[in-house]
Image 1 (cartoon, helix red, strand yellow):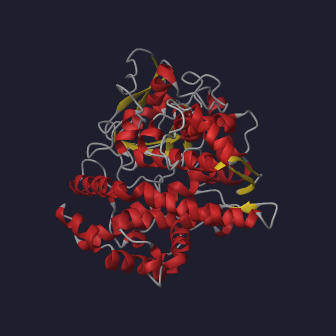
Image 2 (image 1 turned 120 degrees about the vertical axis):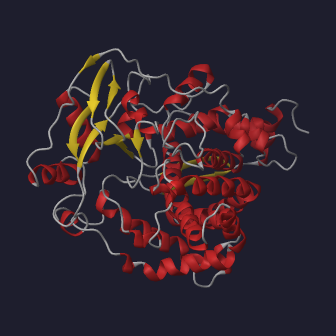
Image 3 (image 1 turned 60 degrees about the horizontal axis):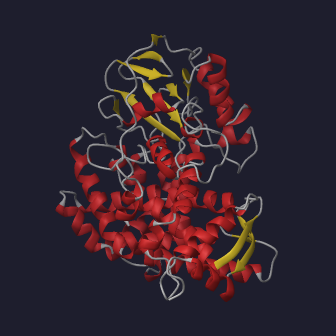
Length: 500
């Protein structure tokens, strides 16, 4: 799988370094009065403006993609948290977050706030470690090895679980006008990740079984609720009950213990591999759970629904183009999607990249300045002091009009051709450019290539199986039109070499 992804990007090069030339400007913006300034920004962020308008309005007011502001969580019950950030909202300034020489990544996964270590067994798992810390290299090497070993069953496990999910949805659509896919998709994701990473399906455990994905949902929610907008409660109740204090681990301690025991019992072989890298059994299990639950399960839960619904609601003819491309590349007598076939589906890959551009699974990235340095942005330079926290909001960064034409539009074939490959230098969803390679020297997502290839495989499978599908306003299918033997045969005949 990794070879598929790397071959899609020929002769990758990093984003060109920012020019040292330019006017030096002080960073605009203000943090306001103590307590009141952070509280105002928090209410704007969650209530009065919302996340997107919070950043856009300040960028427009200061006429700069670099400015000072406060980021929640803040007052009243978050102690020891400095809400002050320097926002970096264009590709030039944002790329500084991926330079280990400039920024320190320790404990800044979601900003100055860090969930209690109780959620990870009182261990700072790899995502909280900076590249300069002794434990980082061991955890990153183990994560990369774990993913490499999982490649042998990754696609087959995903295909079998995807097939079960689609069968469930087909059955529901046979009885109703729509079928919500979110729960079936989460079950699919959790099951295939357990098989790929741990080595077994969750069904082997009576404690985890079909409910493991719900355990992860709750575990994730309690860590992230103070930092994300919540639709569960109307305002002002959301501010009072969800954004005013950190949530305690004991609410999910029982579930986490079951997941821990599941990995310890059924993933002993994987745990033993971690020990080869110098990790203890505890460190191995908690890092495996974080990779599986936070990085992989959490990321796919956000990204795959966006991919499904974006295409399912399209009215431009994209679905027909994708279907024709997928079927024209399938050469197997069994009509299955193989590695080589997938590699040649340029529009499929570009569509996945474009959805990642507009809907990055992790919208915010943070990094703390190691030393004083000058931040470059659109021909200007901004002095940053040691210890200042930089914050990038990707939904705006990835719409930088100086880099992307028609930046606010969904353009499915944006990343096709030489110009498209060049633009991959500025696709930063994975905590680094798409042309980058995860290593112990950086904090780029170890599963970067797995995520993209999995999404491409899902699209290819859907359009292999179905002539058309449609989505409603929510996370639901309203139409799944099965492929007929005639259309499949005609498409195969159009492939190079015709029907075998």
